[in-house]
Image 1 (cartoon, rainbow, N blue to C red):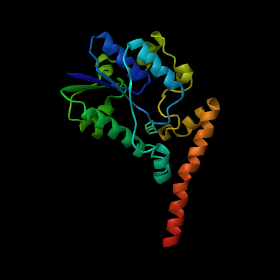
Image 2: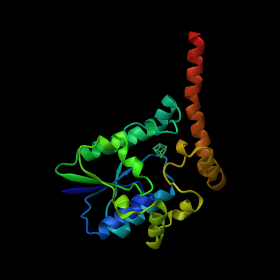
Image 3: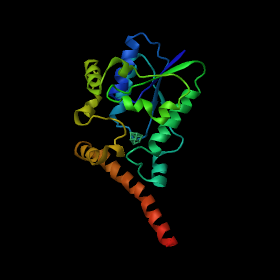
Image 4: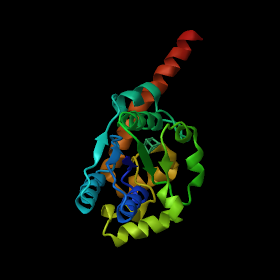
Length: 212
Ligand code: SF4
């Protein structure tokens, strides 16, 4: 039996991995999707998790670059979109290719029970467990647990409650403000990416004008 942890590097999946190991679950894979837009601090966090758990982290990527798709499609909708789809399809393909019986563990917190019922969750052909929900651990519990283990993300959680892509459109204006105020280099990069995304808006406007 393969025990596969879907690992984002955030507080919930970090807490889940440690809980599973402390329960004696023989974790076989720790799977991490590289979005290309991870906070730079995440690299040190992943190294620390590997050091503390003894588990190598398997990094997977989509076959097309984020920036190429950004130029084609523009920023994804805040409700999800192509960026989430590329992550889901890449991870599912990888897990599908793992031979033999398997269980996947996902770190949805006890505050996120609804997320267990989305289409892409229900599409899985193998059993899935949500250990944090079973343990009744909410997001605050996971963060406190991680901090007790010495994790710090170099302060990322001091200024925001999610450490996924630094320019995630789901974060709206508030996320932009956090990045602008605290991470000038990333803010500069975000503005450059805005220009890439605008290429699509300009193309769409030119095409509409040509067909008018
Ligand atoms: S964190 Fe945001 S930008 Fe990154 S893949 Fe998820 S929805 Fe897309």
